[in-house]
Length: 103
Image (cartoon, rainbow, N blue to C red; front, side, top):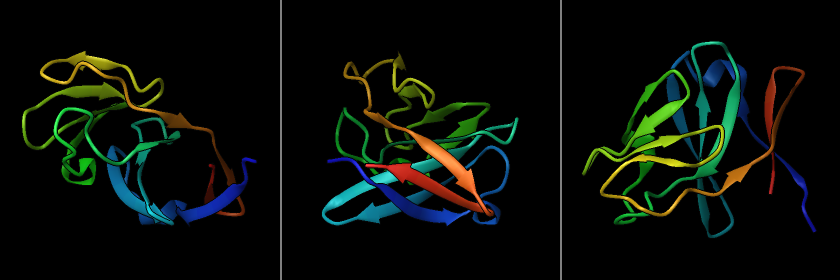
């Protein structure tokens, strides 16, 4: 059953930046885009399990720091290879200055 988890404060992430969020054995990322929207995806690149929290955020995309695959954080869709598998995405909401993730 899905539940809402408190991931971080909105102030923990600058615009067009990313933060790593671990919950149990799983790793996620929280991305804040240029328009102050927040997104959550799996935290590891689908190509070689590299931590995306070290990646570059541009608008609502993140680039893997190892092989430069780009993912759309809104949908998880791969935009550029070598990755060919999309990321899983998770619903987010902001309440009282906190980013909550449904996992």
